[in-house]
Image 1: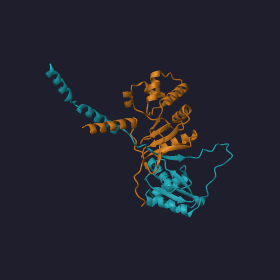
Image 2: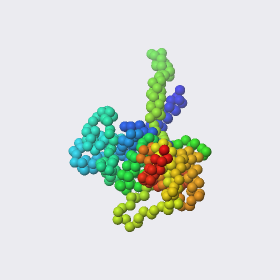
Image 3: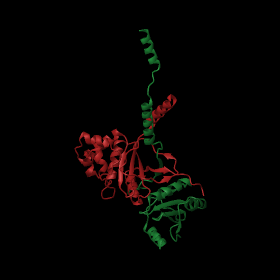
Image 4: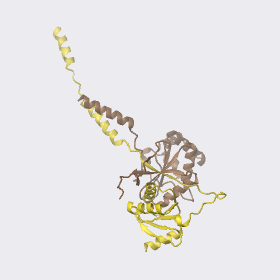
Length: 187
Length: 163
């Protein structure tokens, strides 16, 4: 039995060291597939997720960068963010809550936050909060790059709004997250 | 006394540890990590857009020569309406299969030097369509393509095609 146990522990160690946990997402997205072989960078990524119905979610990686983002945002919005809310934001994965509901959203317990109805971040010409998040994130960490993660069925209209928002903020190079396509053969 | 000592030694030699719980735990952890791990780093497609021209920019956007413009309108029914040139264009329909769009773009690239491909997705077209078409552009190595806004003329064409 010992060789088997050795092997089992070896594998456990391997998986423990290589694993990166799936981040919890408020929506399930099935991204379109492509034959692109570029890998998404692992660090310094802002992900803008759009679901089927066009709701926009924002996420940025890096705990310390997120702390800086919430500091900047709260300064701008003149919020009093307590340390607990700040901590909650820095641990948040992806969120799609309008600006005015952010403090309330952060005050919830993680469990309740899962059931909170997230309306999506407004991104139209009248009220472009996505723009603000992007600007603040880029101030907090200028090395951030932007990736758009859309669902197959997301209407182009929303994608267009996002792309225009990025262009307005001089983000001219961005990634679109896709899944690897199985080669269908050149028919 | 001597007998007791031998007993103790024997007992120590035959010591057997029940490893089953440990093994159970090891496999449990193994299963857990195997299921939660994500190996595949998601793929990404890079898109570089031109900067929006500013009002006081001395360099104006260069208009595309009509004969060199190939317009691909992505419609809402997962089809592509395409036409070459702008005036008196003859719109035709193709699809996203290798025999459709890929063949078309390859032919046009060979036919027209300096071809500029204008991709105009309809507002209600799916994101999948956009990714598909950009993917095709990468596959055929199209040197010049751009995302453009759907114009009223294109809408009229789409409408006439759907009738």
